[in-house]
Figure 1 (cartoon, rainbow, N blue to C red):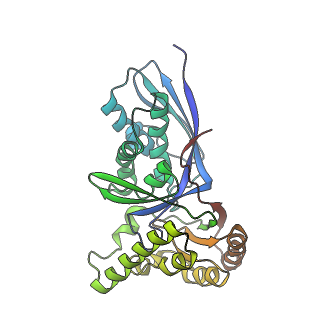
Figure 2 (cartoon, rainbow, N blue to C red):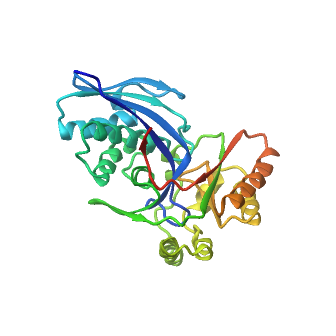
Figure 3 (cartoon, rainbow, N blue to C red):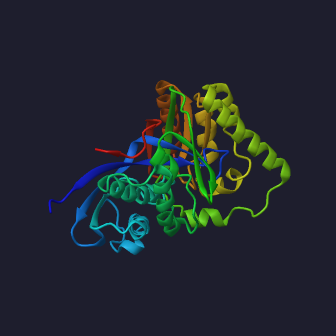
Length: 308
């Protein structure tokens, strides 16, 4: 039997998008992992190569392996799979490192099997891997990686994903301070209950942001990108967050908030030129500190995971 294999680009993602904790996300274009998925005669799931970061090779201890096993056990295909992971997204960076792995393996297997599963089903199996990383099933990073663009998780059980439109001139700037914040830890500091007034503000912002994306209303995007529920707690884990946010908004960003559980911070801007100006400004803020950091400018990736 001839070995069939494909190479894929599994993109980084931004979850929460300020006001949409655990439900909103969008897909990035310039940052992502590469993976090779290969059909084998020997049954089962094997991770044969990992480059970039020190991650476990045992399938049941690796998020890519866990999601692959969940899908494999359900479909019972007449073959096995080998997975190679070329990890470019630093684990614990807040831009969907674990979700890129979890989504990439199931996407690649699905392609090699002739696409028996739709994108929602792929997201469902990828969530099984995400549990390993964050101790809970959530799809706010996985959905944009698999569907592309902006997505809203309407419901986790049963899983329902809504695809939202992306205004054509929207660009993201990111800064990734080289410190690690584990998703499980940053969830632990969140309050179990919030004041009703904050909840009302937050769901008004979510509704406004969804409407703004549909109408390409950049002013309304700016008005909606505020998080009164999560950010006040999580920002204390991120050095110089307030300084970055102030500088980004002064440089013309529509909004600035924590990416996922941090430490990465994202800004959305109208136009690539503004996004690059914002990048320059936040680099100035961080270069006065002793923390190593990286910055990126990316258009919104409306395609999601792709074969390369």
